[in-house]
Structures are given as structure tokens and as C-alpha cells.
Image (cartoon, rainbow, N blue to C red; front, side, top):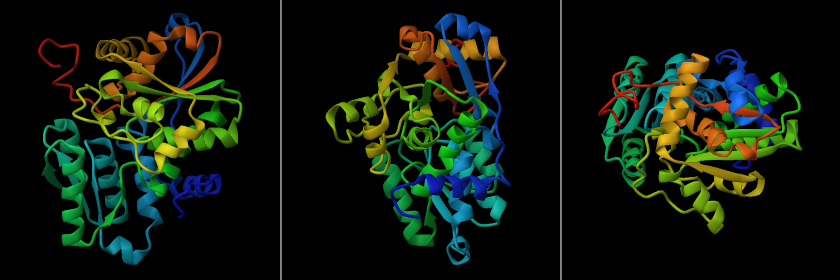
Length: 320
């Protein structure tokens, strides 16, 4: 697959992963509609296999491999959801997976990776350490790198969530998704431009990890530096493949405070009875923090995942 992901690549990814992934539901909430003054449609990737949209991209990447490559196994670095997704996708194909995880990654995500049969190699919680440790593993084992977001196979797979959304809810005015490395958001941009060209595409990002917003403002990638956000899945920098897509297609990024993320997460649990993780709550926080931006519009919101450490819920005393 070429580095420039095409809509044909996305259609091929849909066919390739169809036997393995869930077509997740779209849910609505009268409560959130009233709060925002909009018609909101929540694409529930928290109900995807492994509890996150990441399973789409990981499955596409693993199933794309030729047998000679697959026999070498796969490796990646991830704080959690891509780790679980690649471990599960590799197990599904019967190949080895090594996951480089930063120390301090949520226990629930570490346990899931091990449960799917992958090997964990720990590293320091910095982007440089992740990449260096992954390179060492790759050199030692010969494993194929499946990058968490800066991989055309992964981007094409993530784009299938937005494809489903547009089929389920035609004529959306706005697509809103969280942004960390940009794989989901870039994929959503590519799918939306083909399936619903008039739609506005917005990103949502923690203010304490706002490197994507700063990168787009600067016109080049501004690496994240010690991001201090509860949204652990959004602590990574944009990639060289995702940045140009977002720079070309994205209307803007809405940045939200930590307290707004926690409030949004709790409200979704209480009002919609959906378990979402902090990263998935970020676009909901964007809706609640800037309702005028969305008032009177039909908004598709991608709830990216639902993997939460139930022993450390962010609204519990001492858990943040």
C-alpha cells in the first residue's frame, strides 16, 4: 500500500476486516441534544472488539501482511488500545506480537495485552523511548512494525469507522473525533471527503496535550512534550502521514480542560449508560465546552474506546 491512503484503500480495508470487526451501533441522547442544542449521533467504538476503534487498523495491517512477513511476527509501541488491538489481531492470525509499553500504562490495558498472548517490553514514558525500544526489538526479532497511527494500513482501517457512520446516519453536518497521533481523525477525514463532502471535520484534544492544535497553527509537526492529561490515548504526537491530511482537511481543533473531560466521561456513563474512557470523552467535552459551534447541526461523534481501570475512576477521590 502506498503512503498516500486512497478511498480505494479504505474500501479494500473494509472488505479485508469485515469478518473480524463489529459494525458498531450509533446511539443518541436527548439529554446531550438538549445540552448542546444539536442533533448528536454517537458512533460507539467503545463497543468494538478489544474496546476501541484501534482494532480496525490493527486487523487491517495484520491481515494485509504476506505470509513471509507474518511469520516474522509484529511489533509496536502503544500506551494501551493499539497494544491490545495488535495483540488480538496477531493472535487471530496465529502470529507473534511484541508490544512496547510505557511504564505506568493503565493496568487494565496491560492485563488485556498479556491476555491476548502478546509479549510486553517496558520503556520510559516518552516518545523517544518508545521509538528507540521498538527499533531495538525489531532489530533483534525481525518483526514487522505496525505503527499505532503513522501507517497507511492502520489509517485505512481506522477510516472504516467513519464509513459506517456515514452509512448509518446520512447527511451529517459535522464529524467530531479525538486526536492523538491522528490515525482515527485522518481516516475520518479521508472517508468523509468521499462519502459526505460538505461535512465539516473537527478534532478534539486535551488542552494539556495540545500538540496537534499547535502543529496545525505552526504549519509543521510540533512534538508533544511531557503531556499531562488523563486522556492517556491522546498523549502522542502527529505523524508524518497524518499531519498533511489534517492540515488539508480539518476545519479546526477544539481544546478542552481536564475537568471538562472528567465531567463529560461521567455524564456519558450516567446518562447514556455507556462505559467510555477519558480519550473518548474528549469530543464530548468539546461539545459541552463550545455548544455554539454545534448548535442546530447534525453532529457525528466517534466515541473512540471504553477501556477503563475501574479501580481508578477519575471522579473518585485521589484517583487523578
